[in-house]
Amino acid sequence: MVRRLLLLALIVTLGFLLRFVYLGSVPAGFTPDEANQGYAAHSLLKTGLDEWGLRLPLTSFRAFADYRAPLQTYLIVPSVALFGLSEFAVRLPSAIFGTLAIIAVYLLANKLFPKTPQGWPKELPWGEINIGHLAALFVAISPWSIQFSRTALEANFASFLFPLGLLFFLKGVRGNSRLLLLSAVVLGLDLYSYLAAKLFVPLFILAYLITSRRQITKDGLRRLLPFLIVFTLFAAPLYIDALFGPGNVRGKDLAITNFSLGNLTTISNEQYFSPLNTISPQLSRIFSNKIVFTFQRFIGNYVSYLSPTFWFTEGGREITYAVFPGYGLLHLWLLPLIIFAFYRLFVTKEKNLPLLLFWLFLAIIPAAITKEGYRPNRIGSLLTFWEIIAAYGLVEIFSKARQWKTPQGWPQGLPWGGLVSGVIILVSLVSYLNLYFFIAPAKYPSALSFGYRDLLAKIKIYSDKYTTIVFDRGSQAQIFVAFYNRLDPTEYQSSSATWCCWPKSRSTQTNTPPLFLIAAAKPRSSSLSITGWIRLSISPLRLPGGRGLPRENSSFWICSTRIVWANIPSRPLMPVAILSPATLLSFGRKKPTPHLILIF
Image (cartoon, rainbow, N blue to C red; front, side, top):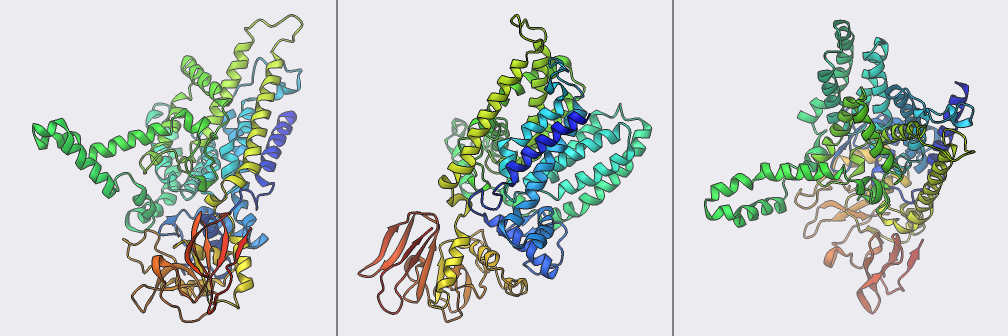
């Protein structure tokens, strides 16, 4: 037992180091979502209100024209209190929970598969390894877990809360009623961690109870009643908010039933060009309509989350969440282990096979009903599943290896198999860490909003010399100004009441503020409205010129794109290619001056 705990401690230490080393600076950049949650936590800490002036929101926090799950924001509050408002403080809770997920997976794997690799002799050091150690190791070095744990990403919390809640649930249903109550609390908190959990967790519990109704005795039903009551108390406010409040704004926007003009045009074209349309227009509508189109999108999305290329080679498509294209969410060497594991699960008719299948197929549903596929941040509850399955596959391989003949002089149990496995794991881990810590920061900085911290520090140098600072993005720059300048939350709250003036047709991101640092004149109007214009000193603003460019009173344009327009003397509105994702350009003011480019 001591050796097993020592080995687990070594694995957790490895996972801890992979998640905490350079946490504040890698990944390069700091996303608007991270800055938003950090400043919301800062506002709660200082005033008890979020940045919109709401006192201790229970079910959701308002963000960029959407509402996000509240759990992570509240967990960031003590971190900000201890370490101040910084990138490290914002990411710290996610890194902690990502490390704790290693322990949760260890315990759950041993509960699901209480086996040890029979092919490994007890007298060797690795004879103390069990399936939990393998699953924990796989999570500790998993690309998705490292990436999600090093950013303030809500989906990462599900990788800890659901395995832990499932562990307590299984132990509670099969004996300990106190653990069943604890399971209700943990799974209830999981609902507040991310939007997808609100659908997946109830579906999983319902499916398990229906299929296990014969095993659940009358005494078991009595134990389940307190569980259901506690879980319902956690769930009720969320579902009330989702049905009658603003809490599901983001979910409705992303749902595949929210048809765009392009979707409606596609459906109309399919009806028109269908051969059945020559027979009867009504007949073509039977096979080309919104219901069929929605079903096709659901199937396409669902299959995308089962694609080996998504998991093992290409990865996700949203670099914003530090998931880099061209590298899978899982190490490629896990694939044969997973395939063999499923083979053995069906052949041996493993008693927990139905539960595992529920976990796999139900966890994909919340992601499949949203627009587009290949979004790893929408399947947080499924991520640890693969490591547990792969660990089971490796155990079964070594168990079967006992039946193989080994060369004369080699010890039984094929210890060289462990050596080969270790080399493969080490090489793949080093390759991934090279990509993550050295290549990605130079290759994908713009996708992670790199440069705002240094940029705002440089702006302060010029704040007493120029009138206007201009951002080229219209809806998220204000949160970086608030975060890095540590604006007084009361000032932010008093200003936020006047935001969201753009019509919805103008932009879906409707909460860029006319704060004293962020204001602009609306074209052809004397009133202020929402843009991304940053003003560092209070003075009358002039109407922006062509294509939204400022006229002579403007001082700086902060760019995060590859091509910008610069008002260079003698060559006005000249397109300038910039060399970095965060470049500061100066414009002439009152009299012609040379243009200034600050690159960092």
